[in-house]
Length: 575
Image (cartoon, rainbow, N blue to C red; front, top):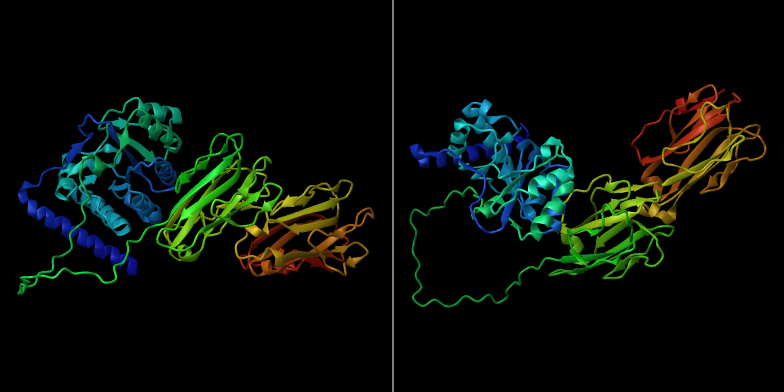
């Protein structure tokens, strides 16, 4: 049995013992779990609750909640918590409550008492393992489904409050953003428990949440988690007491005050703020970390950014730079200096942040970009690129946070870019427009020969661990009646001929310098009578020799080094 499974079994057993001990203490007095649908109050306070999944939608909800300083309750499935422990820890770190919603969402009233208890215990064990906290005494049954048996088992197990709802958003019916907003806002009263969902068919909840919060706040409402609403703290199973069987009392009749000769000052965490200059709006007010800067849904470009950090008890600062329309990557700036431009109508396309000094040792800076046509991209951190390059897409919003070292995992799609461009000169057509990373240059099915080609690398500054100044691409072609060119061409030079009516028959392409340590260049060609041949890479030949066949099209890619094995015999035909 794997170590993780052993730990999980032990923890589940301990939870079971704790629940049985609690049940024994109650003995025959154990009461069925109490149904809760609201909190009795005249104060304008409500509880936002979400059911089901800890995935991308929950991440989107967290962003909105953090933006408006709101805490909510997430009744999550144990299986989903297992799949997304990092996100659940982020939810807890932001002050949200994690509640028990069963392990895999069955109708509990269809299960035996033993099966019901297993659903609750397994999920409770997972919650404690991931968050270090218990979800008791609250739980929410899937579908709001319960009967007397469900309530009795839950009560006996320590889940003495079965949380239902006052206001049903009906978001699980796949309704529109506007309908969700109306269903909630029109029905909230003081003490309401609001039901919404993360994932599944509730696809528009993440877009409705912001309006729900701001509308209710404008009406004087504040928000609380379920434990906060009912004025309780979440239970944590007590440790085993340590009892001294023969304690010796020590009584000092005249105690001297204890003075620490070298007191340690309390640690002060760093705080970050940042501001964006927006198309037709200008500079926005500074926002605190975790808050959106910019706009979404207005099609307005960010033109410049500035940021500052109060390092608290740590040395160091924050540095940042941006990728600007037509200019590319700018130099790093610090402490309220501007990256980007104002008054030139230039869009920011990507951004990088990094920490220095003790800040970099103890914290990560994480950030993500909202990009035209792409929406929110994944999180990047510590100097990685977030946004896009070479697509001409504007960056419309960003979110930045300072988090403990290693607390966030970043995603593979934080930065969308093109790093390779190439163009072919085609019989009767001349030069085609540039193609990028995986695009096909040339023609298929038209019987047209390639006569020349040019290649170049672009946007290398956005690639981590690549020295752009020491990286390049070289290539040469096999030309009708000429054979292989003697000299390799580099970085935008023309390989082949124009105006001579000579076909290209084969090609070799290789990376040079630092980029060759991190990436492979792979390529394949479409050849007269053969069609598409196999992939070649890193200087291997692709095409044909001795047949007199024209090369008609080509596709080229940059891929991480060693991620594709090639077969040179399938990429190049020779007689």
